[in-house]
Amino acid sequence: MNTTNEEEIIPVTAHIELRAADERYTTELHNLVVKNRAYLQDYLNWPQFVGTENDTRQNILSNQMLHQRGYAKMFLIFNDNALLGVLSFNAIEPLNKTGYIGYWLDEKHQGQGILSRALEAFIDYYASRGEIRRFVIKCRVDNAASNQVAQRNGFVLEGCLKEAEFLNGNYDDQNIYARISAS
Ligand SMILES: CC(C)(COP(=O)(O)OP(=O)(O)OC[C@H]1O[C@@H](n2cnc3c(N)ncnc32)[C@H](O)[C@@H]1OP(=O)(O)O)[C@@H](O)C(=O)NCCC(=O)NCCS
Image 1: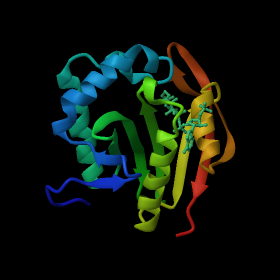
Image 2: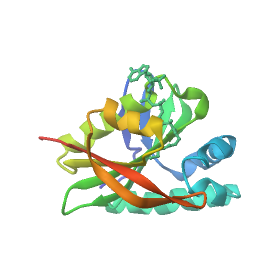
Image 3: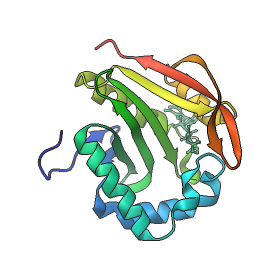
Image 4: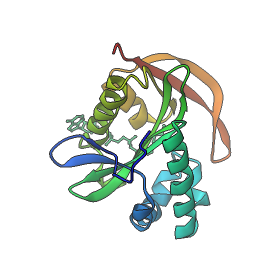
């Protein structure tokens, strides 16, 4: 748990770093969501519910509380101090040391390996601290880019969950991938 006011940062490369979500990033995050809202809505259910900047602030604050208590973790992906996306444990099962990973990236910054490199650093960070040993990605079978992220980063397909994800009026099948860390 991060008990001080010090910012929690996971370094990724000389340019990329993950910063724990904090209220100070509200405006930047809100603007990025609004900019990507139409694009993201094809992949995620929540963008339609983001209205005012205050919605984004409340989202950050509730995630920050879960982050501090260890039931979720929300990190913002920065590249040269510009916010480009989000990488999270949407949920953590502390007893099972299992983390359910979620992510999205600004549409214009995809195809450069930013998310994959961030994911490697994120996994290393939590595995080396002994907090998480089972890393899980669940993504719709039809989400090619997200399936690619899982496969590119050494996750193993464990199965297909039938009609497990509600998105834009349909219940879609979801692949479940996991990567077990030895440390
Ligand atoms: C899922 C998502 C984050 C993937 O973004 P991405 O940029 O494709 O992911 P990566 O960081 O793994 O980048 C991979 C691409 O960069 C390229 N690349 C370049 N340098 C690389 C490097 N050092 N390492 C890995 N890939 C690299 C790869 O070849 C690949 O390119 P391609 O898509 O043309 O094959 C993005 O598509 C997204 O935000 N989607 C909408 C939200 C979403 O679906 N979230 C997941 C819900 S389950």
